[in-house]
Length: 114
Length: 114
Image (cartoon, rainbow over all chains, first blue to last red):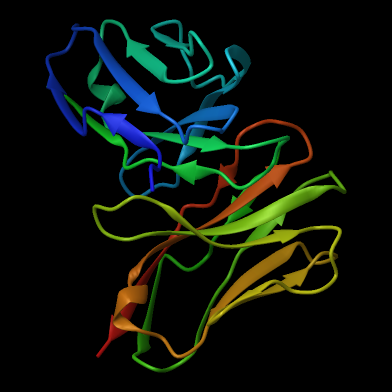
């Protein structure tokens, strides 16, 4: 069973550095979502893709954040000039078909900005 | 904008007993979906149950069932015969008729007392 995978699982970086996370969705899923989860909170939607097209971006996604899904398969989320407030769990989810079908989540990447 | 409220930060139940987790939401849409996700400690989020708003019948998955009250915008989760493995954070989530991401509540921490 190949579920959603994310890499790395943990990332520690210094303030001001750039970081990139990768998400591999379930193979036949056409939709891919990014969320951010801070301690004690539920996940907050950041952005999503249908195939390779980025269709929606939350206001939470500042200019320092960029996401891509180049061939409609895996996706990357890059954070430039990281800030301490970026420390969070970054979750990826995928789904098949037209929304809102069930989203299947990956294990997340925990980012710590020192 | 849609909001999801989980008013119980923490619930505790004896093993084998029944517990109900509360969730209310606010929306102006008529077509939407509701979900309960479970997030065990340091593990990924998994779907527990989902409900389509157009369906009057409450969804059931083995020991998990929902009480969906559309007019009251309430969506509670009942867990019967609680097991130690049910201990986790439980998140209520709303998915609109459009293609945006899910809106989550802040979660309820469920403790199972042996």
